[in-house]
Length: 468
Image (cartoon, rainbow, N blue to C red):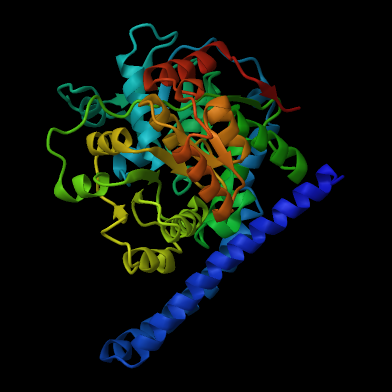
């Protein structure tokens, strides 16, 4: 009988083989493109720039790695100050940081969470603590009137500066990887008033699966995490799985953190739009017409499993199955090869589609028309499409990874991660009726419920873990 250790080692090897296969395809595609460029006039212009870019990366990368291994002395010393470990004031207000999203909405899952949680907080008449969405400019906090007004269909007024009051909780909801130092004065004033700093954590993918990320992301993320562990009194994760991964990673890596660091979690919402557009755009209508349509939603990047899904459908097409595969998501990184493979595929525009610019109502339309949603990722922090599809009553087929088990529960269908043959089998079983999914058994909390839980956990200190 295979031991648990051997099973984990086998799965780890399979993941590394999958990553190697993906990167090999990306490399071969880029080499091919380089060969075409070498014989073009444009190459004479861009070749010197490529050399400059390579030199710049070689010079900057060691500095990023060095920076990630050492927390700034000023932050580290703050942990050792007796005042920082003193009794805290009773929660007075919840100041929700939305700085990064208010500055630039990239349209990714993180920005979606920030906007939906903020919207839910402002629409909730029964919050256990008053809430103010804020942005940081030059170490000072200001309201975000236009940002909030756009979320709740209100009339924006002028932004005003927020003075920190004793007992304020400062919730770092928006991603702050690139601007953490900007918040130092805010942290100091929160701490001086007996308040607390809570950081939202979306996943640990850059440190657990660095090859799934752009090369600059892991060292930047690790540097942020080390600083956030020292500055934060608590972390609030978007799933119980991420909360447990954080606690385990801190313990295993021996990372310094604030004494008594608390960890909690909430589930993201699943409601995206009411109804569907009366007349979807022709390309969306075309994608939804014809045979059984399977929808895969997510940024095109290494960990999302687009090639796994495509290989599974190539098998089904060879068998004569009249099925459609629709990818929805923007281009991410390390995606040149898979993007070319999708757009150059013989079925592209017939039974294979890629939509990278649709809105919520159009996404709802596609969910409603789908035979099932596919989520073939090998690493996630939550898995929004699982909850979104289930809320609209659609079956879900997803990779068998812990966070998907948490969200999908007994209501989703699972297949062996990174295994196209296993995915094809699940699709056959669903189409033939030998396997069924139960959307009602999937996590389907609303964004209003998600926002209320965020406020409840912070206001009542309803944490699930505490680190020594």
